[in-house]
Amino acid sequence: MRLYLIRHGKPAAVWGADEEDPGLDETGRRQAQAVAERLLALPVAERPDRVISSPLRRCRETAQPLADALGVELEIDPAVGEIPTPGALSTAERPEWLRGAFGGGWSQIQGDIDYDAWRRGVAAAVARRGGAAVFSHFVAINAVASTIAAEDRVILFRPDHTSVTTLDVEAGRLSLVTLGGEAVTGVL
Image (cartoon, rainbow, N blue to C red; front, side, top):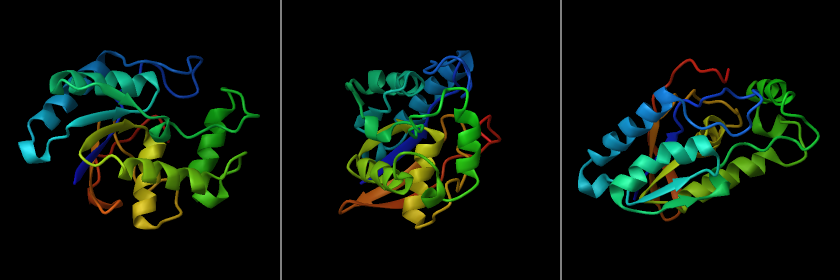
């Protein structure tokens, strides 16, 4: 069964800014509409019939045009959300922590949870969503890609805003069809 993993559109604020849950800016809204049109243009047999989103606003706003066009309810799933920040860190400290995490492996990330287990949980949540379009985040998409590739590196690729990574799900196992488009982002 085909599955699409889509990074959210361009947010109105970047990570590490004062706003913790920004929505989309005007570019992001155009990207959301364009990715919906792209997925709707797929052959019916390959088109998603469900729309899943991270709870964060930028993902929900990116997913909503597709849900509306398909006439389905947008399903919110925290399991495909953003990487959890260690509880002791402030919003201002998160960017530096992320930079450190991005340079190494999942098993090396410092924090109060097992990040290697977190990434496997994201991949398992996605694997349960065959036939869907799943709207998520830069790191969560890398969590899925690195799990499929059996790689410990946190960053395998740099998915652009509204890039579409195509996966197949068979017997609960994910396989990569194509990685989404890459770009230089504000993340790294």
